[in-house]
Amino acid sequence: MAQVARVGVAFSGGADSTALLLAALSAWGARRVCALHVNHGLQPAAAEFSRHVQAFCAQHGVACVQADVQLAVQRGQSVEEQARLARYAALAGLAQQQRCGVVLLAQHGDDQVESLLLALLRGAGPRGLAAMPDRLQRHGMLFARPLLACGAAELRAWLQQQGVEYVRDPMNADPAYRRSRIRAELLPVIARLEPGYRHTLQRSATLCAAADRLIRQQAGDDLRLCAAPQGLHLAALRQLDTARRCEVLRLWLRQLGQRLDRARTEELARQIEHTGRGAHRLMLRLPQGTLRREGALLLFEPCRAGNRGE
Image (tube, rainbow, N blue to C red; front, side, top):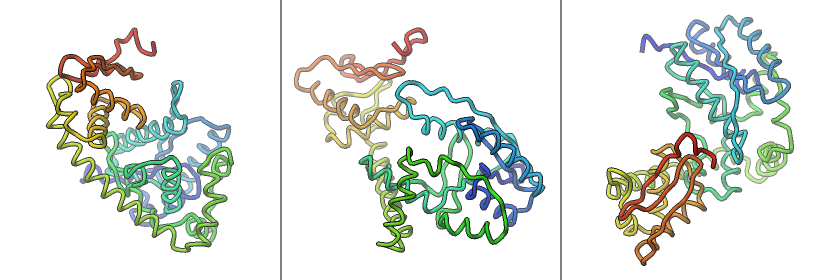
């Protein structure tokens, strides 16, 4: 660990990441901390945020590195989701360049609650309701969220007591975003009904995470039984009930770098069931390839370079 002893802090210049950076400086000192800033350029204030970040880090004597990210969002993709994925990749790259052993993220307890409520509203299962883990591995880097036990109001009150300035992202109060409306309209009501809501909902997320781990473990066992060198055995898939078959398909496709929504996964599971009742044709097109039947197997054929998007 001596060579990767530095601690990276994802630093946007907002209240939460400012509190996290100051806490990291207090714990490890400026020599071991490095601020990591990602500029997506998604709003007019992005350049101002970058200037604030550089000035703040210079004032506190902490190293700061920045990555400018250009998003390539395809039709049907979420800008927010693509920005999130690009941010993880950029942060991991910056952290590895700076020989950091971990990247600290500033999501707090209210962010966790908002994520859980958003998952409920879209009808998510245990994986979605597990919300944000306190640590995860992405792109060969360990990410950690040490503020999940804190609330936004506590962090801002602490910054105010210290007289610390931070930037305010207008997107956080934009009612066009469902998360912003949950924060402004729903959470105050929940807080009045259940003052300990943060702890209670975190417990629910923890239980869902435990259930999801069991589901993934079962899916891994089932996948090993269904796996063939080129694809999956249809007969073995038909032996599973629909829920387990869907989990195997999701896991297999994730390993191939593919994503399939719940409705299309269930449709694929039904098509597989029909192959045992005389149905010979099975085909499902994905953005990056095609799922099809060949004899007793389910295969995935990647798109050739010239055929992508057709």
